[in-house]
Length: 225
Image (cartoon, rainbow, N blue to C red; front, side):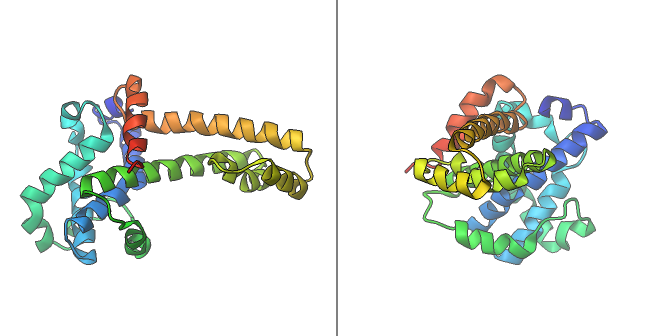
């Protein structure tokens, strides 16, 4: 998708805008961790996206080995180093609003995320991974609701993470009026689809799908100590 995005078609522009909507918060949080106040961070992030969404903005992606995550962070650092004063002098987004972002909850989310990370860069990777997982859950929920299985998904989504045992499965089976065996099968299928969507979402941020495993290791390594 990113390689196609370099050709600047309406379809690729829409896909790239969706990526930006999904992964804007790690960028905002990075600016905050660089010492900027809430309002200034909003101005800078919006101004950055205005520049980012211009024609041919992916021209330098190859330098980051085709990783949208690494490309965005490098582009943001460059923007902050070269456009800081200009961006602060403008109204938010330079009078344009390239993306409608949820600024109302952004700072609350930032306060929750502002743990003692060793560096803004490492925190950026961690928040990118969290945004990625949230996007996968949203897609999985949407699929389940389309199939008329929204209630089942609401009961089973906690099993996507480790730590839920057979006793919890029995409780869910009772709540859904299903046999425990059927619940186990449903959990297995949900986890399988979750892994498929996870790989798909990661691949959407790479110019080379063969890099999925490498990117997965890098992202989830951010949750380490």
